[in-house]
Amino acid sequence: MDAWTLDKKIELIQWLSALEDKNIIEKLIKFREAENKDWWIAISDPEKLSIEKGIEDADNNKLSSHAVARKLYEKWL
Image 1: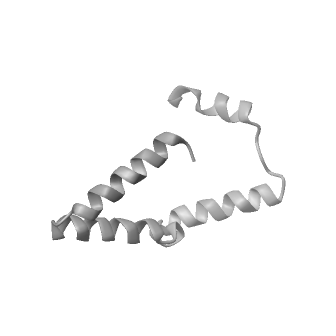
Image 2: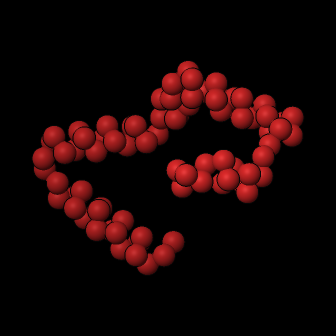
């Protein structure tokens, strides 16, 4: 762990230990719970199908190179 990250974690711990605002504490708890949830549950069915299709394509070697993808989508990049 780098020094900056360690310093920020210590700073947060110190801030949290002195925190008395129940609303902020509740928001932090909800944030932590949301971070621990499985992202698969949070995405839509079309997103899941798209991911599953991508995995199936990869398993069947139906992939395009990065160069082909860049050319296809260059106007949005």
